[in-house]
Length: 328
Image (cartoon, rainbow, N blue to C red; front, side, top):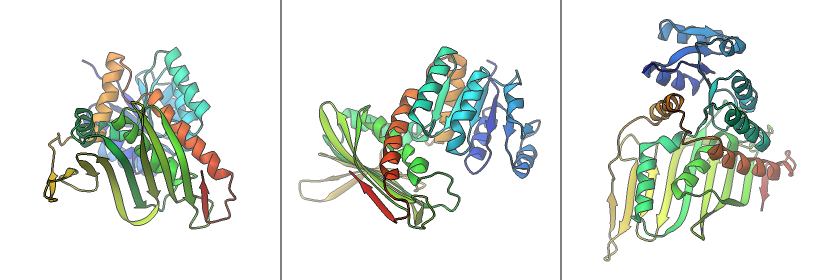
């Protein structure tokens, strides 16, 4: 079966990983970037690769079936809309858009033109996350009591208005997916502009997930100024608690439980070692061939955009010249 050809727009820190994976899958046709040096590196790495600084040239190329957008989030809507209007399938890195109405418009446009629109919510393709999802569904953890996701690092190349737009899409999409929950309420938000530069670089969300009539509390913590990288999900259950530590090379997923004697037992479930991004890119190509709706479609993305848009409005109501803002 002949694979459709894709063009990656944006080959920076994350875009270059998309370039690598689509090249490995034999589907990469072109790379577009404003940075000539990045294009030269891509051209050197991949033989017969088309490189360009002109986005429109990709939309005009009949050999390119899909556009992969890996640019700053405030450009996602415009680039994705132009691609859909040119009858190209589209993969957009998270978030799909920065405005709820923009997310709706992209979904409607893709549906109207029978095009695939997929969002890069990477963790929904992570083998350890899917293993944990199966364990939760089977009752291995018992009744769920609390879920928390911590995503902290030191980031000097901040491109978003808030750390939440950069990191929280991962957390919210993953937590909702694990709990099979489409109804998420934000009870409290907090953000700190610690560097006094107008960008919120430390933030948290208190959430409530409605699952089978029960409200399961949760929390997201994000930071751009933490010198120690932390990528950790904790799911507390009445029987066992799961910890997914994605910074570890091995044994990322661990189940903790207490024996009747009070001794802590730790188990390490087995799951495939596949790279999540490779699985995600592979899924996108499969959707292009089969026409099936992606796992991380616009509906999945809409919930994340809706939550973060609401949070952004709460934070914007507070003066940005203060170092801390909180809202209930």
